[in-house]
Image 1: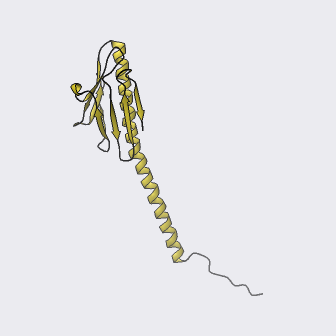
Image 2: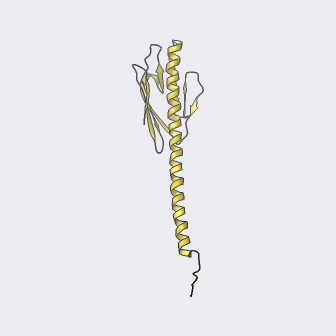
Image 3: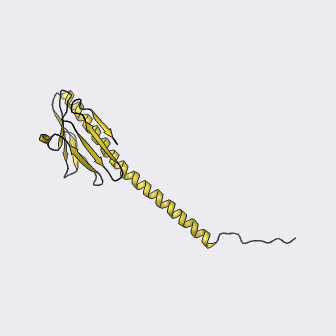
Length: 143
């Protein structure tokens, strides 16, 4: 009975193939995580803006006074009423459409109406549009 033993192990070619496959998989994972992080910044700013708009709407109804949400596009900030301002990152851009006489602002009135308009929050991989109804002052976000 003659038993032959083969050297066990992997060849250099097999090892290189495994390393290349792992590098490709790592690249895919890192890229998808990067897209997810930039998309989450965009979503975070859109959610913060939606909350600020809704707070301004409620503040106007509760106080009986006009409440403004102001945007400073050069400094990349917005604020609702007397609340602390929110800064958005350079990777996110905002485009505001509002009443011309208000400039870069949206007004909420005590009778439940608003100046209306919309704000687009645009990131590298996601974008959101916040619609502010002039008649009901409802704030709706669509992706």
